[in-house]
Length: 429
Image 1 (cartoon, rainbow, N blue to C red):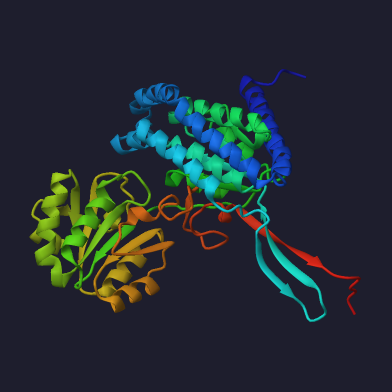
Image 2: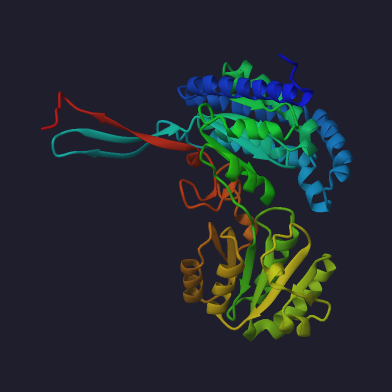
């Protein structure tokens, strides 16, 4: 038999590597499912200390990634997502400590009933098993994902983007070392050691070992995972988030919220991408917010009414209204009323995060009832749709799906449940 072409040989080697990762994760998941909460919390606290004590090493590794980032085509917002500094490392460590402080969903009794025949019925939280997590750019997500998966009793296979390989390698080593020191299976957290994109395809086919795939990144990544995965997928395709400034809005609050939602971190999925302004306040609000956003370097793309009130705004197309810019660009439209605002969000939005600024409680209630998004904000920035901000400690992603999990996915969203039925010699008649 002739030798395999080099490409085939490499693919076989890659397939073997991925199979080893998956098998080890499955074995680790069985052990982790029965690990006491105290042991998992010890690891989380030790891992948090390790991140802070190895801050210089992490920043040095991250500097290599940041230096190479322009070569991968990353824009300023993407490089910001990639960058680690002392503040972000401290925040990642604090996230680990917050997860340690949260209740363990494994073994949680979610319902308890007794049937008329005396059978005791418990609905109890259990881990999902093995999570394959594919993500881009943000190395702090490595720590978040590991923390949430281990605390919820799941093993995780991490596949970060090539642009963060040096940062993720150091992070994984620190997390894995502490797993061993705390007596937990080291394979509970594994990092795919290659940037070859074909590794993702191999792992997405391994439904025998992997129970859930979670992609976190650009639309093309999520589409690929949704198309190729042979296991369930938790996903969101876009974060086309809106802020609607109602006729009854406090315009000072509206300005503060819009600037924060667009400018604080424009490269995140919960940043505002579109501003809707009620016609009754457009003449007063739009020139002021237009000037404020211009000082922040934001490019506006608006409807004809917006362009009249904000002369430096460029004309907006329908494509602009459905685009997740992840940059300092904001689409703007003046709407006649709440009905038009809701129709616009339904037409162009992505069911991620949408906000209303209003002092009218009835309008606020109608907006929250009619806007079908994973999170709906009232007089608050879209940036609050985040696991840390909503008290989940951290998140492994924000789902716009309706099945199993929606919104920030924390500990509880990484578990399922089983029924435990206890009788006393009961038989069914």
